Length: 340
Image 1 (cartoon, helix red, strand yellow):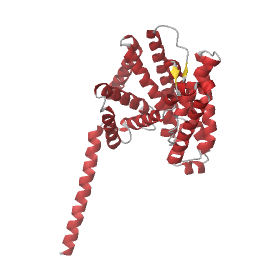
Image 2 (cartoon, helix red, strand yellow):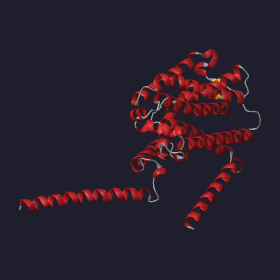
Image 3 (cartoon, one colour):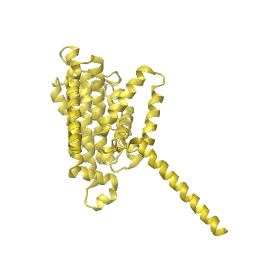
Image 4 (cartoon, one colour):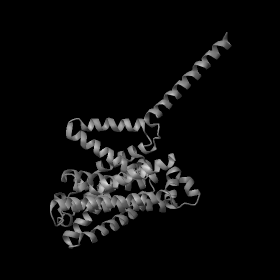
């Protein structure tokens, strides 16, 4: 009975959340619609990064290279070749995957900090090419994209639902990946790459697949971002600080989980906006303190904290400290007794 009630409550909460999410653009101002659209965007990017970083164990700090490629693909195709957004959107995902395959053969033989530095270098190199190739990309001045026809209200609702749909597709894919053979191969590489190779897993192949999947969703998100803002420049779409935020979201929510990046994106962006609007000079320090607290108290992420919560975790730690102190005291007493 209790289990049935728990399931009923869970489904009730999910249905209410779904209805509220669908009705939100009609209930709040355009400002809040844009804020939630941005949160959806960060959740997609964090979920995409989680495929290569959380499941496969490779910290791709240059993952924004695919975001920038997706954004510039849409911008160039829509302005230079008169492509409709739908066709440019698909091309952005395809080009991002091709770039991930090429970069994967070059960089995925590196490990640890060397891979992180290599991906960062690749992102900076692509950014430099974009800045130099000004006839095609607009260079450092950026490039403008045709706006979505219609009123601002329609545009806000369109991008809200578009980004929400892309988020749902991404989460559904990661959920499927979490329990199939491909996901198990990624996890085996994360746990012990040498052992995975001995077991017959082609680690280079699966790492390239993981990065390609991450690049696909990242590139699609960059494509929507470009059409949404109608203007892009290299220093924005190739900004490494975005990846830093995404890593924090994954860590806070739970690395290697399905919903961890989504929860982390919602929490971090909501808290960041709240403190930014009230404590503009202190919000970065407050946000840093929250991140340190999360890393120290819930290092495996919020979704991996059991029902006892943080208090239970700290209670266990205190009991362990007391037990060690008691064993040391007993040992010292025994030594003193033997000496007597």
